[in-house]
Length: 201
Image 1: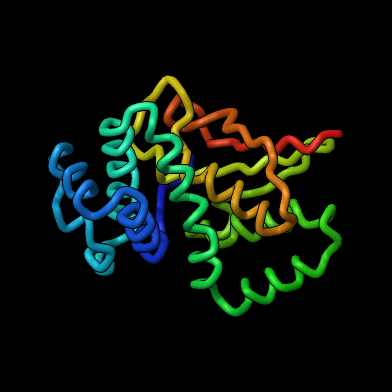
Image 2: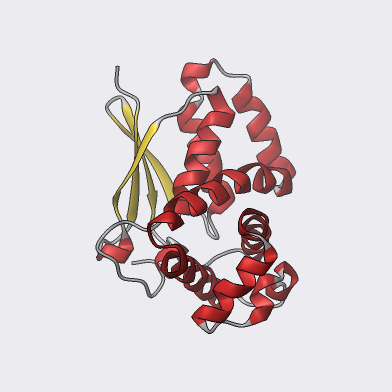
């Protein structure tokens, strides 16, 4: 099982999107109720932290949101994921932006896998952290690190931000909304988190 690492610029964008989604006052209430540092409500706080501490903060903050909102946390975290996509793309390197432009030049039916590969490249702290595979007509995104799940255990999958990112990435690529399921999750004891994109006819 790979060690969990998480780039600081993604964490900062996550905190920005979270604050926008629930409001700074509610964000502060979530932190207070969970006994977390009030500084976590400020994206700049994560500038000087190493990847391991950022990963821990990322998973702990999402756990606090799931506790605070209960079943409603899924929708909130997925919306944050959808908001994250364009910001992360805008923040990306010239090479990734070039890759995204080439992708958009492909026929729509050929954009899905390259789009997921682009997302994997943006989210991976190291090459190979996230990979994309073909399953007959369907696609599978495999996250071997999944920072959301660090020190977390649950009876059901919890990677809602990643689900939102995948959904928005694909919608950006071809304008379609797909059925996406997290079919295994490290929080449930699996070795990796797997997201199945059902295309099928």
